[in-house]
Structure formats: structure tokens, C-alpha cells
Image 1 (cartoon, one colour):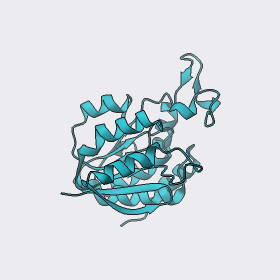
Image 2: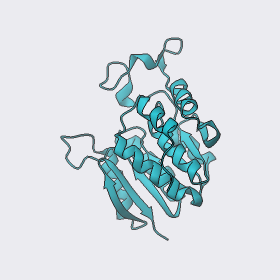
Image 3: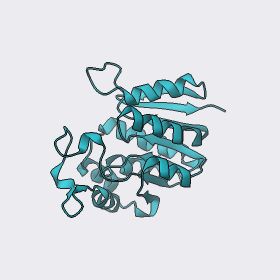
Length: 209
């Protein structure tokens, strides 16, 4: 596996976001390994930190990354909430808008030729993107409704042998919200997926034939 290009790694490290670097490097490895099975899809791009790792790995593996995000922020990023960033407010729209930050991150990393941006809700994008996909990474809204919608819309689009990755798994409710780990466990319970090693809060499941 080739190392992640220095330009892309530096761009990822500069980018706003909540992804641990070890988790990012795992995403790079997963995207590289599974891009041969089909495009890599990311649900929830925000400002592009995870996107840079994924697109870099996908390109090295001969594939593409599809970034799906409405760019109005999830429930925790709205004004007055814990993860609100005033720099992302669009005064004219009176709403969050992270799209420009994502575009800058992708360009900064030199990955525009490996990245497709789909600016809409996850459930709408799923109707337009039939798959199969080599990898699907779910890191969108963290309410139960949002997480369950993402799982329902995208899990069956993972190619046999491909992977479904889910961010922010917290076994202890005191450490974080329970929606991501709930959908991780739900996917595993279907027996259509087998667990691979977890990297910090990044869970990875392989689609079985």
C-alpha cells in the first residue's frame, strides 16, 4: 500500500473536523483496499477531514470518492449547540453551510479529480446512487432517526467483500451518543456483515457474500 501523499495528509490535518488521525489513516487504508470493488461513499463530509483521507485512498486504489452531505450541519452543529462553529454560518441563508470548506479542503489536498460532491440529504442521494460500492462510511446525523435512515438507505449497497464503516462508536453512554453504535450492532445482527477490528471510535464491518 502506498503511503498517503504528504500534501493530502497536511491538508487533512489542517481541516476542521472531529476525526482522530489514527481513524483517518484507517479510512485511507480501507478506501485503498476496497476501491477496486466500486466507488467509496461518505455520508457526512462536513469540512472534509475524513473526505481527504478517503479520497486519497480511493485514488491510490484506482477509484473515486462520492461525498454526500446537505452541508447545513447536523443537529449538534446548529446555533446554540455544543459543536456549533460560527465561521460556518451563511448570513444570507441564515443557516449553516460547510460546502465551501469542503471544496477548499479537497482542492488543498489536490484531490478534485478523485472526488464527486453530492449536495443533498442522504436519503435522496441513495435514490440516485444505485451501487454497488466498495466502501460506505457513515458519519452523518447522530440522532437515532438520522443514523437509522443512513443504515437503511446505504448498507445494502455495499458490495460483497466491501466494507461498511461507522464513526463515533461509544459503548459507554457516558462517553457519547448511542445512535452510531446502535446501527453498528443492528448491521452486525443481520449476519450480512462480519466485524473487523475497530480503530478507536471507528467501527468496520465486512459485507459477506
